[in-house]
Image (cartoon, rainbow, N blue to C red; front, top):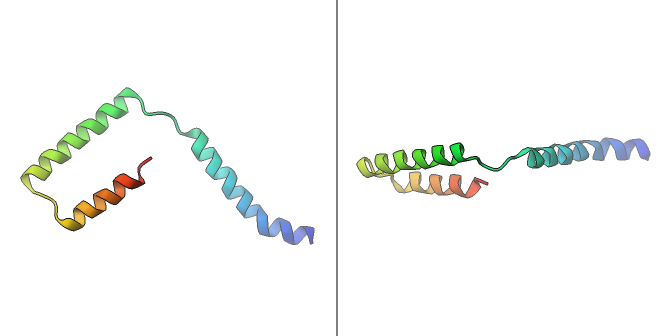
Length: 69
């Protein structure tokens, strides 16, 4: 019974530890990263003014933005 339990829950435990390590390893955004994101957003807005995105592109961007931490 013990061997069967280890085979079933060992991958789950490894996944949980990996997820915890990924969350703990994240750092807060620094000023350079925030400035870069601001520049990226400005360039994207300029492109959208010249060539407006369609509804599918808008929906994709909304999903991408919702998935960002």
